[in-house]
Length: 244
Length: 297
Image (cartoon, rainbow over all chains, first blue to last red):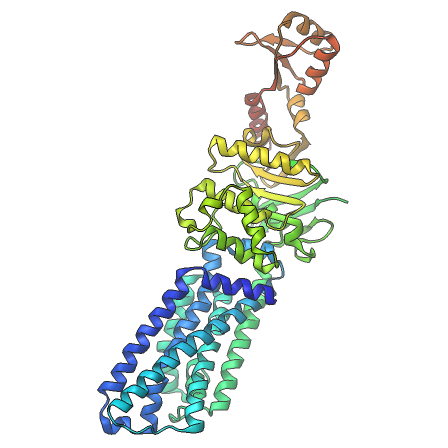
């Protein structure tokens, strides 16, 4: 499993796609951090809730982390490398497991770099504008660690969904539609259900206190449960299906 | 112990039966041509042998185990099913490293197989710039990583130029001469005729013929072209053994319905020197077409 995970990490590193995803993510983080840090009204930026928004920009890395996870699976089906992969490792559950591990490790890199950059830019903006830090100790730590953990777990969600769907375009379009449309509609109109979605669970995990959100602990547990459920379904389907 | 065993192997896709009750055994040290027209079920059979597809019924064993349960499978079996199974943006060397890492083979082995297939110079270039011939060789390199005892190749000569086909032939011969086993599929008999010891011919998912190449030539009246400075004596010797001959365009004798081995033995016994002895390719191709269209009706 460790050897296979090393192989999967090399797959991520050995094409330009992953580098492109990291760069794209960092560009967006810079953009949104500067927008939030410079354009928000001084009074507004003083509140803990708005500073959470500013420092939490790094959570958008979750989208990129999930995409990297998706591509690690669908790329193999798209380009046919899944055949040699399964020939070398006929135990397919091991392959999916290694992809999960690798994508969450990669997600950790996405999370640390994205959230680290977001926090740095946010902090500099606050200092430059003379606005005092409103988040301290536990809540700041929860924000930073929760964001990084959430981003890492989204890598696993990408692998899980992609192992079920296999088609690259289908998986990506489906995930984006789900994350940006379905989750928000659910949370707006049926919050008791919507708060159980991965995206809202991640929001809860970072310590956001929006009405109807779960607690941070519950959010983390729900997100882990999503990864586990999708991974199990992915493993079961991957083991059963023929490879063309 | 059989290297490959297929027993009543059957695969149905809905109403279509792609592989129909296919049984055969391959022993160690043989090169077997797995032949049939496109769509005959060759690739589906290989996929079942290699655990990529599950049989509808029957079983496929490699070294007496289903491939998925074969311990250290990548170190015993090397296989290439598609010549195009690469990420275009990854270098050839990195492609091999992603595989070698999964089975804990060192990078030095990767460089070794790259040298073996003569790809060292292009190893660090991205695969998207490779020719089809280079991709075929990269695929072969991946199959060789684990230094396997059995090599399974699906249409490895596709897209190769004549020089490449010859290179592949020499390579497979050398591989099998070490007592290792090769199963190679093709839809063109001539491509493998000079390489293989025996042939499995399939059509519409069913096994049509399982025989040695020599017997295949003999049983359907193929001819052997033989050039000798003493054509008359040789023709007479062959006639005594019941082999009809005619004179070909280049004054060579055509011995009908015999194997090159038999003709050679008769010439030797008669003390007639032989300059050239060839099982005629064209008639072999006719045999192949005859066999594979025979069951179509």
